[in-house]
Length: 359
Ligand code: AFP
Image (cartoon, rainbow, N blue to C red):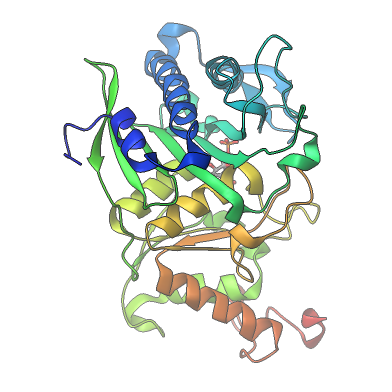
């Protein structure tokens, strides 16, 4: 299809042509693009629209809700609830799944989303995004929470919008990962990045390094080697980035390679990581895998993790395939006791881990 001319609607219709069991999927994704255009308009207005600042409320994650968190959530609900394409929706901003008003027809899909990812960046005008995941719903009647708890391999579509200097959407229906840029003059997304591919190797990593002392040893080992650069085992220098909007860090990785890590840490033992499986790790994992990358918890493929709750968190490491495979090897060597005792440069000659640390 023609780069620079093909609209997202035409692209989706072509990609899904003939896929009978996905007849309505293109229509649902087009409804999602309508919500994204609305959110793009609000984020672009910033302070002029009165959209900045917090509401003084907390979401189910215990995180302060920004005005735009709730407004973006409303935009996704209003664009997708009436078309007879979804049976229900779930979101980072809603404790429980959304039951459609009784007047609306129920459809064959479940839509799960983070309406505004990176919202702590919105007040400082740094890129934020929307992440979405589509699952089939084959049961009759309104879905129960348990009906949403499907592993990432069962997603039929996933994607994100990034509200940056340009507004873009990147999505997959299982046939590669493709990028579209919003032409604000005509109000349509145009195919600009067909068949995105993540380079298998990279020298750029993204992690919130302030958590270093809380990471597991395999992650500390990996990051220490990146920081040691030419002087260490890797024999080459690495660069580091951390935008603190997952969508923005992931978009960079799709454009030029890299590895993104939000690992499990001991800062809050009740949380096995910060990122949520159903509406952050799974959809981004699908996008990354379809672009030739890998997405792992460090010990398992993210998309194979069996969900146990709607807002479940998982450790996330994703991007250039060869780096993910190295990280997984470090986790295997640590778990089996094979790796040499790791002495973090943070602790100089004192061993960070006494023998009982492995217990
Ligand atoms: P917010 O939506 O609360 O800003 O969180 C964004 C996010 O879930 C993800 O997009 C970032 O990669 C990560 O959190 C940033 O976490 P830190 O603030 O701990 O670096």
